[in-house]
Length: 102
Image 1 (cartoon, rainbow, N blue to C red):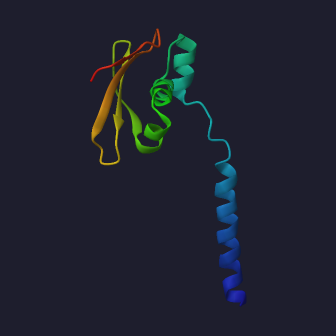
Image 2: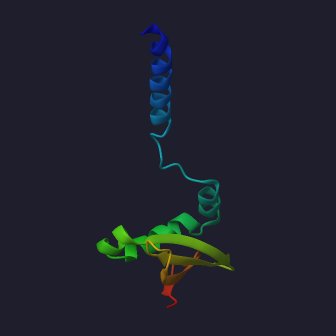
Image 3: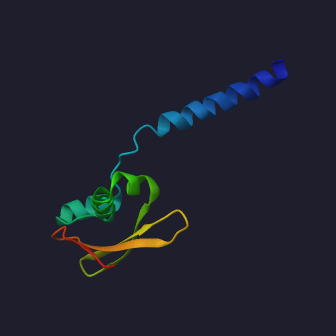
């Protein structure tokens, strides 16, 4: 019994430590901070902007992903579970204008 006591305590301590460290998941990234300082939309914010344009059913089914940046445009794709592209959007990081490409 004593032989298993310390490994069990160690595992419990490790799990509790990991759970307590993952408490604050809404921490801005370096790119978020840079975009805010420059007065433009960040990549993450552009993804959220597209996500909120989807219906609630689409939000449950599809994945929104940043693809690339060209000049002031972010290219965002919406995928299904089989990684098939459903929609492609551009988001202007300066004006927050959204255009669907498909």
